[in-house]
Structure formats: C-alpha cells, structure tokens
Amino acid sequence: MDDAKLNVILDRHDRDPSALLAILMDIQKEENYLPREDLGRVSERIGVPMSRIYSLATFFSAFSLKPRGKHICTVCMGTACHVRGAPKLVEQIGRDFDVKAGETTADMKLTLETVNCVGACALGPLVILDGEYHGNITPTKLERVMKNLKKEQG
Amino acid sequence: MEPPDDKTVRFQINGRSHEGTRGESLLAAIRRHGYEVPSLCYHEAVSPYGACRLCLVEVKRGRRQKLTTSCNYPLQEGIEVFLDTDRVVRHRRTILQLLLAMAPEAEELRSLAAEYGVEDTPFVTDEEHADNACILCGLCNRVCNEVVGAHAIAFAGRGLHKRMESPYDDVAEACIGCGACVFVCPTSCIGIEETEQMRRILKWHRDLPMQKCAACGRPFAPTFQIMHFADKIGVERSHFDRCPDCR
Ligand code: SF4
Ligand code: SF4
Ligand code: FES
Image (cartoon, rainbow over all chains, first blue to last red; front, side):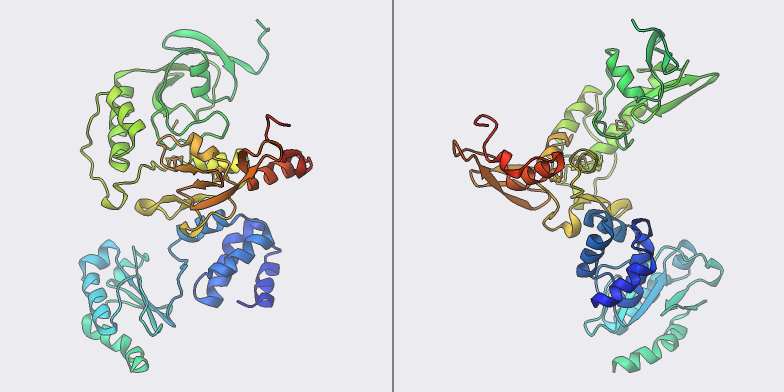
C-alpha cells in the first residue's frame, strides 16, 4: 500500500493504538490481505509492537497474512452445513478450480476458505461468493453460482 | 509485629490462621507462609495469568467452597484455603495428564507429574507439536513485556494452532537478547547458545553480537541489551563499555 493511502487509514483512526483492529480491517479491505510490510509501518507509526499486531492478525480468521485471490469463496462447515454435504462442495470447488481449502489458485483468481458456521444454519449448505450468500446449495446450483468465475478463468 | 491496618487480612490455610495483604496473589501468600503449591506459569515479577492450572486449591468463603487457581486469586479477609484435598489432587493429576499430552518431551513437566504418580497420559498428543516442549504458559511473553519492555514475542493463532512465536516465526527484531525469557521458561524450551562473538536465542531466531569489554576484552552481554538498558535508565551508553568487573 502506498504511504499516503496508509496514512489516510491511520489518520481516520487518529493513530490510536486501541483502534488497531479497525486499522487492520481497513488495510485488508484495500489489499485483500495484510501485507507484512504494511504492518511494519503501522507498528512504527501508532507505536504498537509488531508482536502484538502479529498476535491479533493471526487470532482472527477474518484476517489473512497471505495474498488472497480476486474472488473469495467461503464454504460454511458448521455442523448443519456439514451434515448436509458441505465437504462435498469443498471437494467440488477444489476439483473444478484446482485449489485446496485455505489456499489460492495459481492465477490468483480464487481463494477457497472454510468457516465454522456463519449462523445461517436454516439455509445450509451455504456458500458465500464475494460477500453474496447462496443458500441450500446443491452440486448443480454450485456450478451455476461458480459459472462466471469459471469463464473468467478460461 | 506491625499493628493490623486495613490492608492486612486474616485467613486460614489448612485450618491454621495467617495474615496477608488484601488483594495480593493467594499463591504468593501461601508460599510465604512456607506451604508448597506447584505452579508452572507463575512468577512473582509479572502479573499472574492462570494458564497452567496447577496452582489449584480449594477456597471456602462463607458457605461456598470451590476449586480455584491460587496465583490469580486476590487474597481476601476470612477465606479458608485447603491445599491438598482429594478433589485438588484428583484434578491436579488430570491437569498434569493434559499438560503431558501437550508437551510430552518436557523434562521438568515429566518430573513434576511423576511426583503425583502421573507417568503417562490418556490424552492424544498432536503430532505437529510432539517435539515441542512449550506449554503455552505465556511467562516468556509477560517477562519480555512487563520486565524487559522489549515486546519481542507474543501468542499467535488460537485454539489448537495457538503458539508462542516471534512475529512471522522469523527473526524477532525487537529482541535484545537479554535471556530473561530463557531463564523463566518452565520447560526450558526456548534455547540459548553463546559464543565469543554471538548470543543466539533459538526459539526467536535472534542472533546478537556480544559487547567486548574495553578493558579486559571479555565479551559480557549482547550489544543491543546494553543499549536498551542504558537508554532505559538514562546513562551514557559508554558507561557500559567495560564489563562489571572492570567498571
Ligand atoms: S531474550 Fe529477547 S524475547 Fe527473551 S525476554 Fe529478552 S528481549 Fe524478550
Ligand atoms: S516458551 Fe516457555 S515460557 Fe514461553 S509460553 Fe512456552 S513454555 Fe511458557
Ligand atoms: S500458576 Fe496458577 S495457573 Fe499456572
């Protein structure tokens, strides 16, 4: 992230150490992940030790320390979704896009993530693509949801 | 003896009356009166954290008697403390088994467990951590933050993946190599190596050049540590050109 942009984020939170979490969220929103080099500058400028930032960034699964793909597909693996076939969906996406859960495709198009329950159990199994929730997913429905992505990837 | 003021409280240990200071760590008070309670994550120099659960005792307050960790229990007027009840010993054994599953290689832990007749654990050891003697007690981290003030290391991850780590498990740039964490670690799992030129803190991947005494030429402390402390106590860095013997 360029310096000016980072400073805008920091100033938005008054460079307040207790706003660290919000600052990290803003950086991730811009960059899709938390670049190490950015965190180094955050540490220097708001006076929070790097160890503390790293601790926080690894605690929340919403943060990623690795670059993520242009698109992010999250499969809910909570109990309800799990028993209704979520693991099969993960398998299917993995096969179709050649990616493992928690990883990103080689062309950086898609990151596949799993989470333990998003709290919408009645809609299970549930797949979230770029923030959009798709409920009661079957393999055929999943194909439809992922169709545009597949085309994009060629 | 000093007259009792409002900070002094009376309490009982195993039925005998004692005095202590209101709010102090119950574990510290118990030990000061000569009783023994095992612990792995407590050190009087830093704030208690309640991670290892070994300092378990039973505390009776009014009509309620309950199990509690003593290191982070603030001493209060009139409590009755029981150190080695069946309940305490039974739970402590289970805790030792759990800790053993976490760090089967840790010598200090093995021998403490043996004192309680615990030689083995029924719990599953995560293979990923099998050779890791760290019990996640957080002492190294508290000492580094609260005493040294270097803030070099911290917990990373959570749940099964929680670990004590330098940022990115890479060189801990903020570590001054003082070795305080190595000294307090209850399972000796951090590791330190020293040569004429270098001090190396293994777990934090930190190598630090040693300062040689300007007079006798003997290396005596890592340069970074000397600079850190000189700045902290506000003396000229040159004050530490010589080793303590030659100063
Ligand atoms: S050796 Fe490094 S990590 Fe350990 S207490 Fe000292 S500064 Fe902190
Ligand atoms: S390295 Fe040692 S002191 Fe630090 S958390 Fe692990 S066991 Fe505790
Ligand atoms: S010493 Fe009290 S919990 Fe570890």
